Image 1 (tube, rainbow, N blue to C red):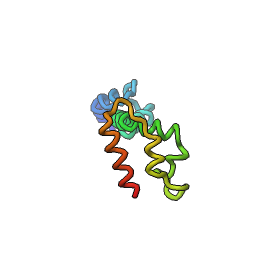
Image 2: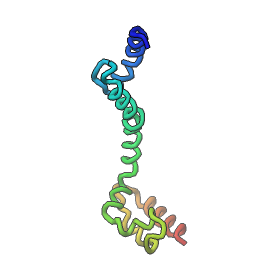
Image 3: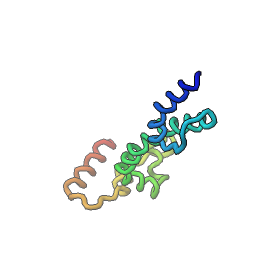
Image 4: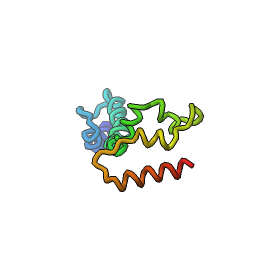
Length: 115
């Protein structure tokens, strides 16, 4: 690769490196660090916002799992222990600022699906 080609590649790649958080100009000495920065950004960091939003939406469930891991384990791990009953699940769910009609509907749904 000629020196002119290297410069052209470096100039074309530099905006991507900046976007990925790589703070240096591309050179032959730091090319592997630049590739790692691009891979890290492409694989993890660019998806982090979506994963954070997904986790935020699941936060009530995540909190229940953290508070009662033994009771909720059967919902996520097959054959680990006795399945959680509808009554157990109903006792674990915390409703903050939810209309009573919605609570009743949810309780009926769990009872019907549990049978």
